[in-house]
Image (cartoon, rainbow, N blue to C red):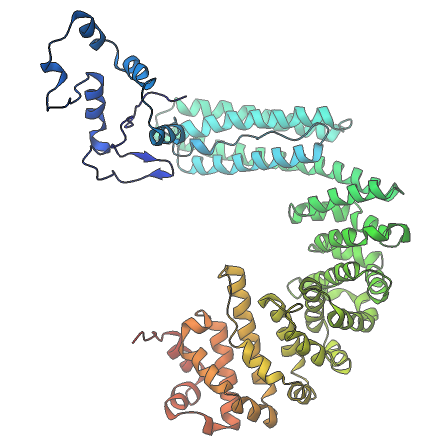
Length: 579
């Protein structure tokens, strides 16, 4: 239902104000802007509307009944006129505009629909998100000394906390004594916060308010701690129930459903992954992966394991249950589906990630590394899709960081030929993310002297040159970053391989030096990346040392002869010419 205009609104189409998507400038249609809305409303209220011929209502003789109508309240008259005339655009504007003058009032959090009956996990996650957000926003308003908002949000926070406690109690199992105590402490702090913020509204002395602000801040902090403890306890209970269900079930449908719920929890972040790992989730999932009757559930269980192993507790649990040996068995068993082996490769990629320092102590991995590397190279060679190839190549790339012996194994397994052949297969290698994995492997393998001859034999220099020209298709930040990594690692690979004179001469013949110079001098070609610039300067200097005749004098004097840092500063501050 439309409401009467007010606070700078009118039902007149020509008057500017708040549009459907926010505030905009008054339309230039010869009508009043927002600063004249009051005058326009007054004109509507007393019916000073122009008639054809330039006359006004006050110059027309009228009967007593007509005069009586003119004295009716303006809002009532507006509502009567509304029955005969509607303007769709104005209706949209009025319905979209918030009633509250508070700019953040429209952001008040409401649980839409709410979790279904008997679904304590979703209830905890949704209520937990709402309360966490409210706590953060109260802290922001407190820092701004907006006491009215702090108090109203504190009251709403108390309602959310009470709802979470009562709703969870209604759908969960019998509550523990520890949870009962924390629930009591939480509600006491909520009441205390509401009471103290209400008192702050009545205080005008700044010094008193300052001392009370510290009290409110401390109460808010303690409340947050109690809420975190309560939420962790409740989630731990639910995770324990899921793990027990997986551990005890011999029904494939029950196990599938429960494993799916566990995977959903891993997507909520590292804290929940830690809880799952501590409560035996890794053990239960590997138990599934060791039962032939559950073979069709292996991909789902392995995908969940990969998510859990993003935290240290997950990796430690994996090592305790000989998880690496189980992964090796799956990868080397051709009777398993490609999807199963791909998900096993994903777990290997996760636990060998160079970005996770705790994975470097995975001693059991070294015992099975040769089997795993062999199986991964085979998976890359036989991959039927880009996703499978990406997972297998990512695992290989991480393993080359994990241990230097892996590079020698890859060399013996002709991995360079497998990877470079895949680059020409668009079905397997079709994104910069996949090429990032391939060039990472090549960069790490290029420290070996024997690698150079294999690169030349497989036309690898030409492919590396193509990677120096990697461009994003979509322009998304993730894809742009992947392209930068491909360019940087391709330059690093070229610099390392150019120790071999044959590789250097092949690179010069293919005009690699021209491309490196272009990347150094043109910031747009490297997306203004300093990492790419440094790598290209290093590769250019290595090539110039072998074939200096391939450079012009200006390039040699600016990019090769000075110190590396001087050339870097020259190129990083270089402005492009648009002539």
